[in-house]
Length: 329
Image (cartoon, rainbow, N blue to C red; front, top):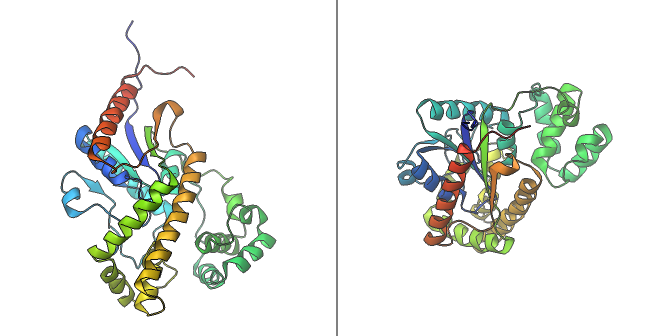
């Protein structure tokens, strides 16, 4: 009797914290498997930030199709809902041309919007947004205010996270209901496909060393020029692109508030703290079924030998999963 295999379309996820080697792995997998790499990093969508967000180089992008990299001006704040629509279109394009979609990024909420669906929250309106931005100047106080009116949402947020606190406040102010309530309501469904997840989970010390080294390279490659050009646009400091790692610190340096060494130290520390939160998030959020998930406890990029060995293992894993018999419920 012939085995019955899973006939659903396949999408691969390459996820993990910043500087863990996701892009190198996704590129190598794409070349081996005939893939299209789709960006799942919230900062890499902004076109003005190629260097500071470590976007694939033009040479890397020329090696195989890349989608959703540098597609939006920094002046426009892009949401999870916007990315989800764009990503679904990119998935469909890849499947229709016989290519394997490879979602690559460290923004967990973006990936979850595909794998688990997304809550639809009404637009809170410009007045609520403006009020939230003003209050977010003092995130600790804003957290206290949110705790008074929407304790369920406030309990899930850190008092030091102005972006998420502002979003929570504007939703409550503009809709009369908190984010925690909206998340219990029916929303957009998950994408109808089978996800295979490759998650990078290197040790924190390895990441810290890599982050420091990479930021130094970013300076050499034009990060200061990139931030200077961004500041010349006189954008709202609350925009996501203006808070990308390295932008606030180098902006402070360009205003002569700190020197380059201090800017570098602060940016590396901030990025390190962020990778810790990313790793914690991924450790508690499944992006695929356990049998369709592989965890790599190394940083890709340490050596060409490691990359090649892992590529061979992962390609074999993906082929095995695709050809495996359907699992009974």
